[in-house]
Length: 254
Image (cartoon, rainbow, N blue to C red):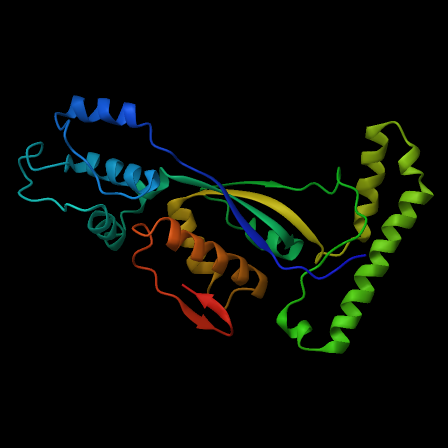
């Protein structure tokens, strides 16, 4: 049976530093003893790319420099405060967003710059029991929840009936199954739960968090990017040191 669900966020990858190559670079630049107190490779690599722009690993590489910021946090805070976002584009993170609706994915794909997306294909994946997310306005009404549950169950039933009508389980040709599955998805609701892989650079991540946790954004995408923001602040504290969370209508606003 179809059932109500809540979107889930999984961090499945992020940029890693090649420490051997980094040390070779520092040797080449003449600062072999330079170190960073960055807690993650993501923050370390962002700092390295930024410092390389001004040769600010110390005061000895650039005659115009008389002092440098010592900590990773102070350096990245200054970079972000000045709006030097280009160095944030080097670090990339990989999220898997599960049990999100196509309402959500239609909103997400508007953010194209600095991203990569791989969405579950309903041309290949046959629908059976369709799970769904109910916005708060629906959850607060027992009658509306009943209508939602009844509708999704009926639409799930229609998918199973069509599969039986076409004898999909007895077909050997995957191409034929794909053609029929693609046709059948046209009576699937936009609110059905699906999955999407979403990768982005850190500059884009900050931008989308700020745009999509706004109280003016759609509820489900606010929920998802609130989860992503919570994860980002905990995982990369120096890259998000300027973030403050305010709860608005029960959802986080960064």
